Structures are given as structure tokens and as C-alpha cells.
Length: 329
Image 1: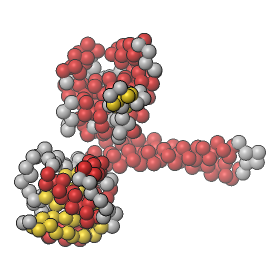
Image 2 (image 1 turned 60 degrees about the horizontal axis):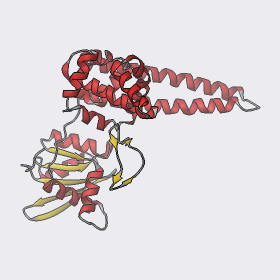
Image 3 (image 1 turned 90 degrees about the horizontal axis):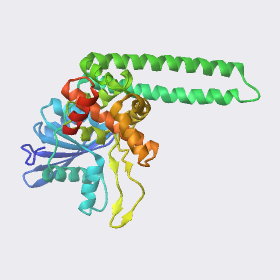
């Protein structure tokens, strides 16, 4: 992160149709509203210049097109977690809310706080994430049709035509899910051939989970330690205490990474039997009175530590070696 940004700061509040822009010329704060299209992006660059540091919130698909455009024009882009800027605004006791005010707060944040420069993902990773999203949408549709089919079959009177159509739809969705998953895994294996082999050497992690983990972590290239990976997956423990007051039990944060967390949890059932380090951890926690779900979450953490150590070292799973490397990561 840069503590003293070399470029002028531009705050951009992102919405579906427009962009509220706030920038500074000498001591004067200026505002601009542009459309959410290429013409609007060009208008923004003409007004502010390309060589600026543009600060915006992460808003899914709404901010990506602009971020890519500004990056291509030679600008630096900082994409913030919306919660970060929300807390910054609250800290300054701001009253009222509008797109113009939000853009100005983004400008102030960029002027006062260190920023991490955003970098676009590789094209193949973007395509893989789109395939992953398509798979999840198809699975949701498949579950809906499966539930509708089950409900129909419980009726005292069943339409043969309705039954046939639902069965055909379920079969089609199943075929589509299998095809998209196969295409996704093929792309990941082409991009991360050696990493896939390394991860599949870990007892408890299969081919699909290895691919999804590499996609989730971006190939582990931007991670400095395993704690970052665990935090991304929402598996970090969270404790609520204040003085002598204890608010419930220690639980995982569940902040982000829901898909990979679910896959790892399913892997943990196999890992606690076949992975020596995971089995020892699970048995120790259960013997100490911890419930099995908490112990399985700990196994998920252990799998992530092993995955990070193995990918970074380039050495396949070895029970004794892996445990030592994780401790020094």
C-alpha cells in the first residue's frame, strides 16, 4: 500500500445507471455525473485526466467495467469493501446521504488513507468465475425442479404431461451442470496443471475441490500467508468478549467464501479419516469436549494450511514435512 499516493485522487460512487464523481482542482472540490457506459467513462477521463487514482466501492458487476476501462487508460484503481467506507463515514459523524456526498467521502478516504492498487484478474480466471456462477445458477434451478417433481409425485392425481415435462427439464439441467463443470475443470487444469496435481496429493481434497480452491485463491499468487486464505474463506475464529462478559461461543466469521467453505466442509469428513494431521486434530478436539462441527471446521482450517504450504513449496503432500512447513509459513 502507498501512504502518499503520487496521483490525484478521484472519488467515484457507483450505481446502476450513473457514476457520481468527485475530484479536486487545486483547493476546489468539483462534482461530475456521468452515464454508466463507455461514453460516460470517456467523459470522466476528459474531466479528471487518466493518470489519477480512482477510488470506488466494490459493487459487483456495476464497478468492473469502469475499473477495467480506467486501468486500460493508465489510471490506478482502488476498489474498497463497502463496509470500509461506511465505517469511515460513520467515524466522521456524517449526516445525510447522497451519491454526491458518497463520492466526496471516497475522495477524502483516498486522500487520507493508504490504498491498495487494484489489478484485473487473468482473463481465464474471469471466465472460470463466470462458469462457476453459471453452475451455481443451474444447480439452483435443478433443485427447484427436483422439489417440484417430488411435490407432484405426492399428489393423489398426477398429470402425466406435467410429470414428463418436469422429468425432461431435470434431465436437461443435470446434463448442463455436468457439461459446465467439466468445462470449468478443464480450463483450471490447463491453467494450473502443476498446482492441481499438488493439491490432489492432499488426502481429503479431490479434483473438483482442488480446482475450486485454486479459482477462489487466484492460484495463491497474491497471498502472503495461510491466515489470509483462511480469512477469505470465512473460517477465522471470532470471539465476543467484553471484560467479564462473554457473548456466546467462539465461532467462525462466515464472511465471504461460502462456496469454497461448503466444499471444504464436505471434504473434512473424508480428511478426518484419511489425512493423518486432520485425523489427529479432529480426535484431539473431540476428546477435549469440543462438538464435532467445531472440530470439522478446524479440519477445514488445517486443509487450507496444508494447501497453502504445498502450493507455495511445490512439494506434494507428506504428512511429516507438511506439518513443519505450515508452522513456519
